Length: 246
Image 1 (cartoon, rainbow, N blue to C red):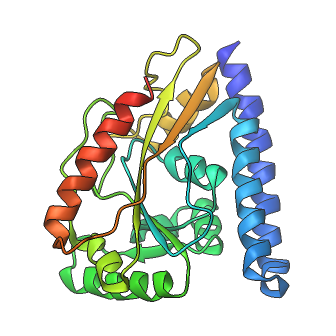
Image 2: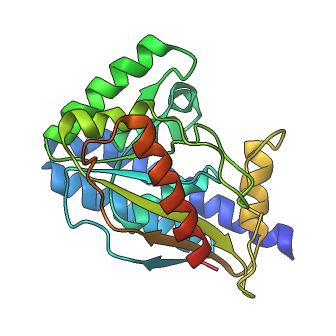
């Protein structure tokens, strides 16, 4: 039964992904930015619906940019969940751009790509993020730099936080958690260590009663802090918000 459910959901998601790609390639160029943002948010919400995942949002997201969102990172599904809660322009590792179908969708949704091993590329992306924030965008990052196990956060890297300082833009922390029907943390969407993307997707689609929790904290200004001090304060706040999702 679980495998049949997963297969049915997967087939529907492939069709939904293909429809999204067609929209990006044939209609996005003629749309205003707000239209594209609404389309991406609606598309992501439909992904959760087709996957059998309920979205629960706590706290108050900022109504508009400029704002830098910082969140803990658990799964490939985090991006979809955050888009469904409210459109944002993600910063993602460069190899995502080459993933079949997903890469094209991510690029169409406005993702900024970074070569994580390159310090020079990190500076390029910081400058690009600064420019997008100054233009009024909502930009999102995962300061851990990789996915964690969903129990405890990894140390936050401070480099990309510099973009908010340079743009004098607020940062809004948020916490993500996946749970089952009983409210206990679910590791079905986990994508960490040696786990494969295919295996993570299949476990997610086979699961029943998944709930994606998103909890927004209060926006912060850098208030004279350097990027390292601010990153540490943001990690402390995301950890606090994460505990509130239980």
